[in-house]
Length: 224
Image 1 (cartoon, helix red, strand yellow):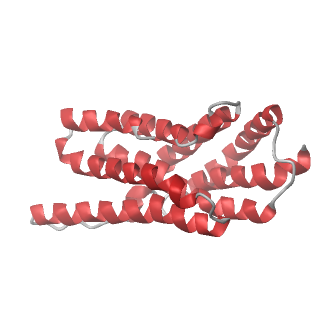
Image 2 (tube, rainbow, N blue to C red):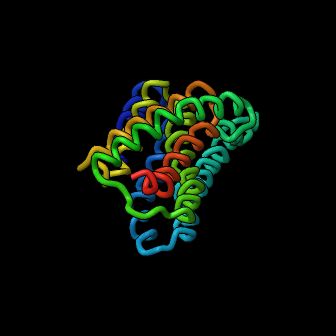
């Protein structure tokens, strides 16, 4: 997960030194996530896991990025305003985002169905866990698409943010490296990034990610 951040750091040093503070803050937050994620979530029930992921993937990054704005404001006469739309949390583009989300959703579910059929899926449907997993997927969308794509793109460029977001998302799912479900992970990363690229809004990406999780846990076992 951390390795791809080398790319924006090198880019920032070479071309955008004024963005280095934010890039370094994101990297430090990712180190924090890598160190604490598994120890904090091990053995937790689903509800506690949601709270932990909201803390690590949403609240902690927001807090430290907000501090960078405070630092920037001390360096400027004109005050900057901390805006959530830079992370895709906005009503602008939400209709297009949702439209694209539902457009790409059948493809995403079909790929997941094929992958789980080839590797052997869950035997029993779990609807409560599916709902919880749908909600929890927002945390990953916020971090990997909101911060590592939309926000990072404003600090570097499209190519750097695209590669960093996609590779980091793939690397945080090492459990899929040994089976064909990695294909579903890669496709999901590409689809959700593309939705955000076209709309600058997280809504459609969350629909794809969350529904794909719900399908895997609650629906696919009924079909197998």
